[in-house]
Length: 440
Image (tube, rainbow, N blue to C red; front, side, top):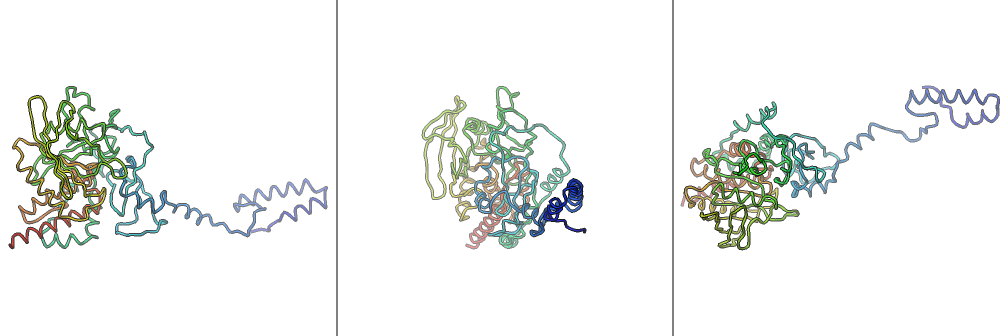
């Protein structure tokens, strides 16, 4: 490797033999440059501290963007971080763990089709405030990945008998694998390109799938903004068309649009599954204490009934010479991105809504269901309602097929793995109730 020439030797030569100063200095400079080029360090570098660049780079690469405590605390409010199309995912594996080593967290940018929401794989959506203009609108050919996702959602099925349902409901590992395999089918924001549209959406990447979106009637139908609302029609049991409308919680900017939709669609029922605030605003208070008028529609509160887990408001809606009745079930015992502590109150609410829907006039339109983003809790409620009907009618359930059907019409329905598991638990409980009633 050659000999090391220390600085003491060089200085001694320069001091004792002045005529050789220039020659020695020139030789030293050349040798120093060659040494540095060949071995990556100068002659004057100390060997006392070894430098392992590989280890240093590895330690830097392991540093997560968020501390573990921030990462775990973020799950309840994750949608409030202003989503963007390319979202970093902090993934600690597919199995549920209560603790994890922060050094093992990895950040992987993924497309919208690949986004997953759960307690173990959390999507953290980050964007600079104000950079909110959407990116494009219009039909475009499906990519191979999107085509594959569409095919999966059209064909996905897993029929469960009662015994299979009970076994499946406690098989967390299989449920997780099934959930993560099912495409979310989120909309690419590039499909929307209208200035000002951002003011119509609560979350930037939670957008209505274009083929099933609710189109508001407008005097100027060429003005896209006047026809737009973040809402989708969803099929019900046995492929019933437009049985439900899933939508985001109204914002201050969209309260008028929301009431236009309620009136236009002749909806007899609204199911609200969110609090007005959960750390941040989740939904605007779109109803009055007494009477208010939006978009020519007069909304009057007739009665308010408070139950243990929900409240019921009955409204009278008037527009020109027509008058209708509307019921709002406001379920307040379901935490954001989590699941209720108990399943029976949800089953009770599903059954009450079903009976109210049966009692509505035949000309009534879809039941409107919303939470904050209109995909997580909303998806759980609608899936539970559909599957309860299937279980009563057929004696079996296909939770996977129902989830796929919902996601075809609105991306991200049943947002987290925990919610997917909860739907199985609720259906298992409901089947036991049905069996017990039959025995009596």
